[in-house]
Length: 192
Image (cartoon, rainbow, N blue to C red; front, side, top):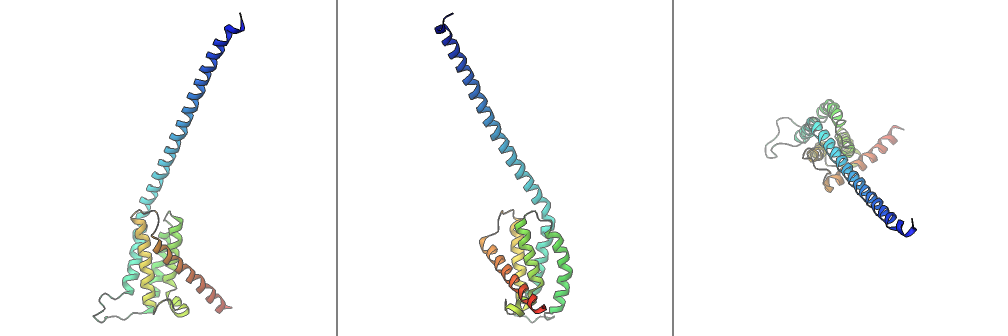
């Protein structure tokens, strides 16, 4: 047998081998794409499942922050209040309420939102100090109402299944965080 007779056979074998290699490469790429889609769907399903599970605690958090805003805001500014605002009464009520809020915050799957809600809860707790030490608002009532509204808006964003809070809310939460850090350093220096 002559070498010239083997060239077509070798060329045919090389073409067949190249076809198999191309086919295998295509199949592996399709399999990799399918795996990515499955993984993305799995992650999305898990995110949706966690979101659904977090709705009851999120609802309780929303209700607590709504109570803070409502307690701290007079219903009708034209009618005198029957019961005047009581700083001590509010603080003892919030102390009890905050325990449940903290447990519910821990059940929110988003680390960023948990951090923001923790800041808001701490802000309500320290609304008196924010007013007295930093001049955050005119009085504790106004400070508590504003912080309660922030918490309400943040958790409402989560409950609408929005992936991120509006930039304005993030900015207000960041400002509150920086004020609380400043307050921590002031309170720490007073203890020393």
